[in-house]
Amino acid sequence: MAVEAKQQRVPAPHRINAARQARRLALTHSTAVFSTLSYKMNGHPFGSVSPIGLTDTGDVLFYVSDIAQHARNLNHDPRLSVTVFEPSTRGDQNEQARLTLSGDAKPLEGEEGKQALALYLRLFPDAQGYTKAHDFKIWGMRVEHIRYIGGFGEIFWLTPDEWLLPAPQWSAEDEAGMVKHMNEDHADACALLLQQYKKAFEPTDSIPTQAGQGAKMVAIYPDGCYLMQTRQRYFVPFEGVCSTPMDVRKMLASMTRKARTEAV
Image 1: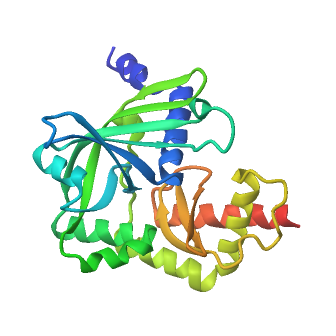
Image 2: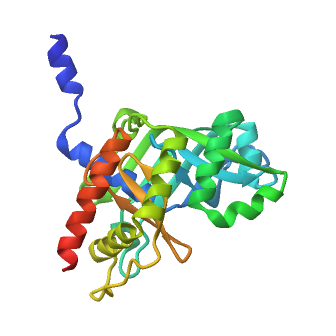
């Protein structure tokens, strides 16, 4: 009976795929609508917009001034929802994917805050100037509720177990070393990976052969990596989930070989 109960809790393949697509949406589109409960308006819903990043596991990071209205609201009531979506360049926006993540938010302090801010600034280097303002803080939100709509008939309430990934078996220093190694010793691979990404995901019929030129890796996640090119950030998904640095090495090598073959 215990085995049967455990098997029943295993997500169906379509739910696993929905969680993967939802996570990719959040990693790709970082501009989020923030929904907080207004302190000034006695709990009336209040909307704002701010960039977000994700931790390795899938919790939310954001960097905000204490004087921002949504920060003031969160200081009185930590409940927060953030919504990201696939923008529509034409047609009906309601046909595009969207995702709402909800939970309680709090400022991150100590070593946790230091590492979170370092990651955030790699993802959003233009925010470096905000560090000179003493009222900016890095915040985190533990994701508790996940609502994902991928399109017609693709509507899910995902569980935290389905959304969150296990913590990878590498430290912040390990990740920094992997990123440095890729940029210093495999810049050609970074360019190939970005070129291949653009061929697969960008809505255009003509991708130049040097489309990935100048790409720099800025972060590695269990399920993908971020590449930066002329201040534009791209999340390149892996073909699976990596748990160790060796997994990452094998994944990047495999994807680079595939990109070289398809570039010929």
